Length: 294
Ligand SMILES: [Mg+2]
Image (tube, rainbow, N blue to C red; front, side, top):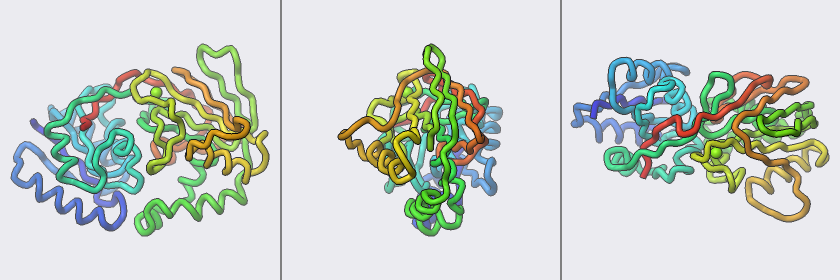
């Protein structure tokens, strides 16, 4: 099958370099797989669009969640199947889909012999996402982590950023209006996460209910009424660690379309990459993307 292999040479920790070499070796005698390296942000998106124009039948994204996000934006409405070789820092999507993380040969085998799963794709305006759109605190943390620190420290690079933001972040007034919902939430919140899947970071889960092919988005609101930043982080950890004790400190509902405004405006992250601001309509296209899974 005529396949474009898009490799992000900067994705993930230092060990990823060895895995990229292994990958190149594995595909070196497979003439129908064409490897291409990216050399700047946004190029995986351009290469994916080019692959569709050129009539490639399959794309393999070798990188992290950011690389996969670029690829699904590049293919647009084309239903070309996308395989994943997880070589990033978090590899959240690979966790969710049970694609082996530290085993390039097995991940490649899954692409050759796996099945196709159609999953929902979220839209923030015209930008697509597969995992989540996060507005507020978590986008501020993502924005604070230097790519160099991420290369050096991996996931732990986020810890000092979380701590820094804990002392400086002030919540915003949000207006959250969901389609088909009588209620409009007007609340002061630290963060609003619109999840397409239950896995949030690493193997932490933000929702046990979020499913990638139910045609619905899960909206999770971390309200400031719970108290200061310490209480917010407590609520976030309780949610991520699935601790269900005490009073419910987050609001959670499902919808197909939600408009999110905030005052002052807050940054937004899509699949772990900062991308624009609040003042955005977020929608879902059911089963809009075809991924190759075990
Ligand atoms: Mg869903």
